[in-house]
Length: 326
Image (tube, rainbow, N blue to C red; front, side):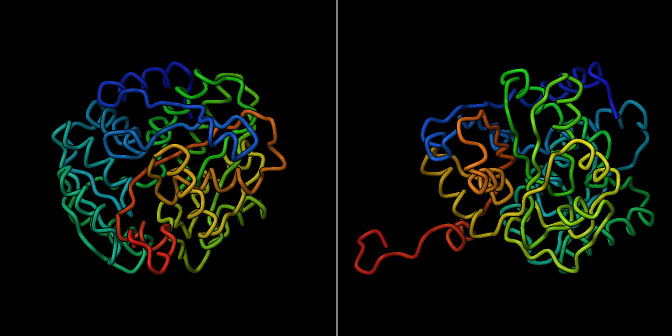
């Protein structure tokens, strides 16, 4: 999909807007796992998630190769849309984003704040995506899918940063939504000639990639009801699946309750807020605790964009009767 030189150039493009994010070995988190836990903090980007890197690289190429493009259109639950809106604002490119009805108000507000025109349509991501694709032809806009080579190239820059800082990781856990993040990690690892095992993570409520990985072909699901909206995918991308099946050792499924516990662990052990998809890698590592004892473990904290009401409902324990803080 790309070579090391292209990845280095993409890193320079991203670096003009997004400084390298930290990769910390957290002592309390390591104690919890019984392994050295190194967290790649993609929740520290200007949009609060890793996908900003893909938008910057996608629009950089578009401006060079397709400068007459009237504007971009896409569908998202939030982070992909923030990425395109952020990059579009830097380059003066109009961006229209379709979201499902009932989408996170915080995500909607952030996309509008970055300059996107926001349209609500359908009951889930797939319905919003299909309508955005339909409107692209009508309005003369370029449709940006959630998985695209330039997006993968962009997000692979976080893997380049991580592997250059921690080339001796035994295993790396990566959440899977539409697949750009884990594919970027696989391709960067291979370009650097490393042997780190890469494990994909999905929700039990949206297991399309896990099912497809096991079956060896695309398997779709009728619903994607996980509260971790960054992993709420019903239809895997065939190109992404091919890369994952070739380069990942396995795909782990975690429950929403396990994700909530991992979000609490991130808060108590590192004082970082993780969205559902962002905490999924830790949830999987906790599930694998006997397997990773004593190892060096990488965890992708892919984003921190969760609204307060959802965090309270999903993550905060019920207040104890009579507690003055309740």
